[in-house]
Length: 468
Image (tube, rainbow, N blue to C red; front, side, top):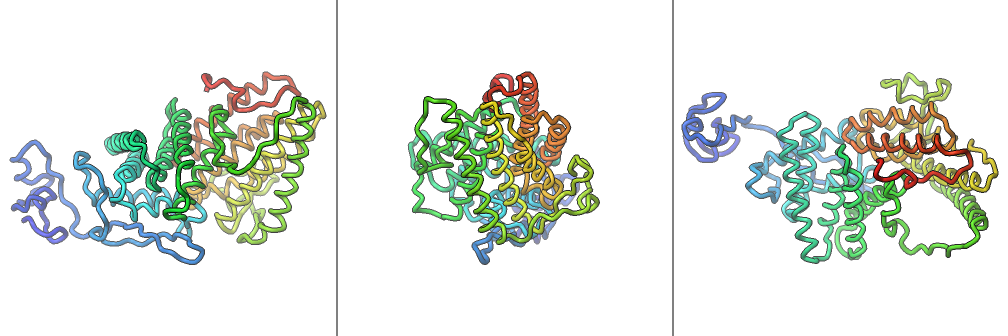
C-alpha cells in the first residue's frame, strides 16, 4: 500500500517504506511486528498546510497570506534527530500564526513588528539552521503551553536549547552578524517573555545585551531593510521596557535608542541640574505636543472616541474604574497603538517633572500625569478585545506599567490595583512576563509606602534586585 502521498490510505510508516499496509487501526500489523517504533497512525489524504508568503501591497505592508499545498514549502533545516517532518513543522507554524494572530484579518506588518517577522519566516527557511531552530522551538513551546501538551512543549524546549547552542557557535566563531542571526536574537527575547521562571528578567537582559552588541556591528547598508527595520523596532521596544520598568535598567545599553545624541555634561550643583532638567522636560513636552497634535494625529484613521461601557464590556474588569469614565473606541489598531505611545511618552515626561519638583520641595500638582494615566486606562478595553489582544500585549504592558508608577507616585491604591488586575489577562494570552511585572510593581508600591513624602524619586533600581 505504499505509494504517492495523498493517494495511499496506508499508515505514515508504510508509506515511507513503500510496503503493503493492512490498514488496521489504531496500529497496523506491519508496524506492530517490527516493534521498537510505534505506528505513527493514519493521516487524511488531503489536507492543507499554510505557507506564509508575504504579499506586498501599497506602503510595503505585509498582509496575511492564504493557504497553499504543503509540497510548495521548503523544508525547515532541522536535524533528523528531532523526528519532526517538514510537514509537521509547517503545520505547527501555520497553527501558531492562526492562534497567536487570530481574528484580525486586517493585521499588517506596519502595525505589529512581530507579525512582520513571523510572516517573513517561511521565505528564510533553509537559509539559517539557527533561525529555523529558534522559531520552531518558540512555536512548539507556545502551542504546547496553549494546548497543555507537555510533550510538545518539552520538545520545543529541546529545540530552543539547540538554537542557543547554535548561536554560541556563531559567536565563538567571531562571524559578523547577519540578518537571520539578529532575527534569532529577537526570537530569543520573545521566547523568554512567555515564561514565568525566577531567571526570566536576567535571561531577557542577556538576550537584549547580546542583540545590542550585534546591532552595533551590523552593516545597515546591506540586506533586507524592511526586515532589519522590524528587528530594530522590536529590539528598541525590549530595551525601552527594561530601561523604564525593571530593576536592571542600569545594566541596559541604551545606545541603540539614542545613537548620535550627545548627553549634557554633568553639573555639580544639584539644584541647578534639577532646574535644567525641568526646563528640558517642559521643552520636550511642548515639542511632543506640537509635533503630535499639529503634524501627526490628523493623519491617523480616526481619533479615540468615548463609547458606551456596554460596547466594550465583554470583560467588565477591563473598563475604567471610575463608572462615569467612558472607555475609548478607536477605528484601527494602528491608531490605538500610536495614541497609546503618545500618552506613555507624555506620562513619562510628566512623571519626571513631578518627581523633580518633589525633590525641589515645590509640592507639585499631579493632575497632568494622572490625566495621561487615565487616558491609557481608557484604551485597555479596546486593546484587549479578542481580535486585538495578541498584537497589543507588549504595548499594554508598557502602558500599564507607566500608569501603575503614576498611581504609586500619587498613592492611589484603587487605581493601582485596577492596573494590576489587567496583568493576569495579558499573561493568559501567552505573555508570562506580565505576571512578573505585576509582582515587581507591588514591590515598588510597598517600597513607596515606606518612604516619606518628598523623598528621593523611586526608580526601578531602588528595589533591590535580589528581592525581585
